[in-house]
Image 1 (tube, protein in one colour):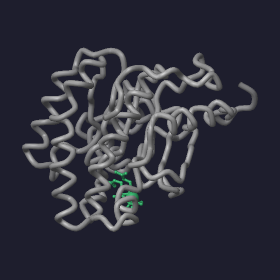
Image 2 (cartoon, helix red, strand yellow):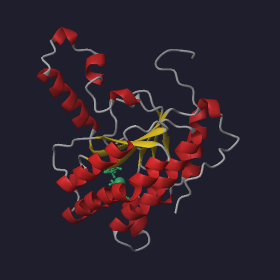
Image 3 (tube, helix red, strand yellow):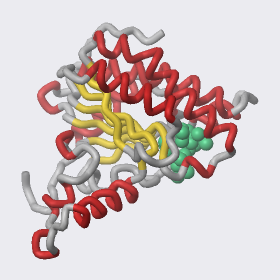
Length: 246
Ligand code: IPE
Ligand code: IPE
Ligand code: MG
């Protein structure tokens, strides 16, 4: 079981320069299981401890927003049994873990399409966990579920049209304000596990200037120490936003 108590942050981390928003592509569950001769779904199950431990690590660091990619709009292409497992697993995880996250002051939010394919029971648990944790202020755990970066932009554009915004008023602010969670700010640091060097339709708009850290660690092996290492790497980077010096 992950220990919810704050861990001392390594002295190599500058606590005044911790990324405000960290986003993670939690990848490599299937390979983790297959390497042990187990069904892929065992890997998804094992990812639960990684998620909780990483969340506690983020709390120890003072991260304000942790966005995690749990199910993509493209993951529906997987075999029906795996999709069913993932729906039940994620729904169950919310039921099992919402209260302990609530006790830590974590607010749970979701990014993704709610009105497309997600079973009612899952939607119910999503709503229950956001409602329970609605007023929490310590950190936001934003779960990207049935999420696609392109779908998010498509949905924002559809809302622009529905709002009858004239072409002359279409600017970045108009689009941003129609994304799923514009108030969460853009991720400063995006981590992808499992040695894949791609974005896979995650936060396309929001990660325009994020620092990217890739690690070989498979998600079920990922723990808060790996988050700390990624933050150390982040702190070596110089962010320029297209300009010159800071
Ligand atoms: C990430 O692990 C979890 C989801 C995409 C739901 P994968 O299931 O993609 O695991 P690999 O990449 O096949 O090892
Ligand atoms: C991205 O991982 C989606 C999630 C982690 C939920 P995938 O495993 O689906 O991405 P690809 O297929 O390797 O690009
Ligand atoms: Mg994968």
